[in-house]
Amino acid sequence: MAKRSDVLEFAVLGLLHEAPMHGYELRKRLNATLGAFRAFSYGSLYPCLKSLLAAGLVSEQVDAPVALGKRSRIVYQLTAEGKEHFAALLDESGPSAWDDEGFGVHFAFFGRTDAQTRLRILEGRRSRLEERVDGFRAALARSRERVDGYTLALHQHGLESVEREVRWLSELIDDERRRRESPEHVNEIEPPEKEHP
Amino acid sequence: MAKRSDVLEFAVLGLLHEAPMHGYELRKRLNATLGAFRAFSYGSLYPCLKSLLAAGLVSEQVDAPVALGKRSRIVYQLTAEGKEHFAALLDESGPSAWDDEGFGVHFAFFGRTDAQTRLRILEGRRSRLEERVDGFRAALARSRERVDGYTLALHQHGLESVEREVRWLSELIDDERRRRESPEHVNEIEPPEKEHP
DNA sequence: GTTAGCATGTAAGGAGTTACATGATTTT
DNA sequence: AAAATCATGTAACTCCTTACATGCTAAC
Image (cartoon, rainbow over all chains, first blue to last red; front, side):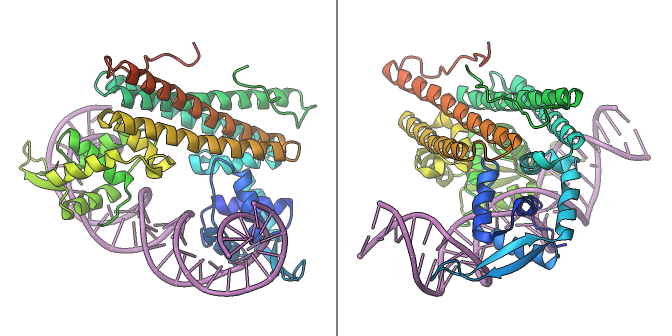
């Protein structure tokens, strides 16, 4: 296995799982779906597609130009092995799904993730961030008075950002738990309430 | 110029500007000061120090072991050129000081940054993030209904995070402006109010 | 007695970007 | 007439991490 990035590979498989696509469109969707988390350039996407092809997880099909003068496009599609592999990745709930790199992608595909796995990932992520909160608080307590106002403001803001992240995860976890009790409304998720009404 | 990272180089110069230090301690301070923004390992710090030494921005002084059995430490110190270079970096207020990479370090050294430069950096950073807000909002409007609840939640949360960042910057900018009117209290900065009282 | 901290370094490699190459089409 | 969008790719390069090498001390 070529060991390309994991994140990119996972994301590509996930998008191709929705529909076959060519590289150019894949990249747009990629950066739209992952949004804030990550952006990829062609320089990493195309080589990744090649390695997925070599690994037999996707197959390519060269389409004739759609319109005259258009370049011919290479449409990629998941193979049976590719689907299997993606399903296996979806089931992962270890540290690789909790950390900064992995969490975004895993969350982006929560719609196709098992309920138990979702809960485990959310909880893992939360406790990871809680550790970070503790670290920040300790550092703040230590520096307090020792550093200038700006450094203090930076640390304080950093701390509050992570705390906010933890609250968000807690809400999501509660939603998941509630949904487990009453499995009628499966696809309902937090109504778009504003944080600051 | 070896062109090592900029961020790391800048941060190292800034810390050595406070006091001479050896590598090991430098790294601790680095990761404490930059906190949430970035973490560096020895594998990048030591080579960076070597290149700063080669560039004549720092000088080294081998201290005899402090206590018996302790390894001898190499204390680094800014040279005159190093101080000059650091001052020049502090004065930078272009895009390199606004983007994700650079803003953290520049802000961490705001205590030694000129008031005008501070304001320019804060405003540059804010407008950069406002662009990002617009992008997210457009993407959200487009996807609305087209994606599943989780993806929506992810995008919404991403948007709110950036909006929050913008509000924070706006407060800092107001503080700077106020301080410019009444330059008596120069080192006062936002009293540690909690966001959610 | 083994883990953590102090202290300095290097080599290999991973993960990705930038810049380039190519070329038609639509928008400004 | 220039710039953006579509479309695919590659090569060089950057920046940083991991793992290793070394060795002593203090704490658990």
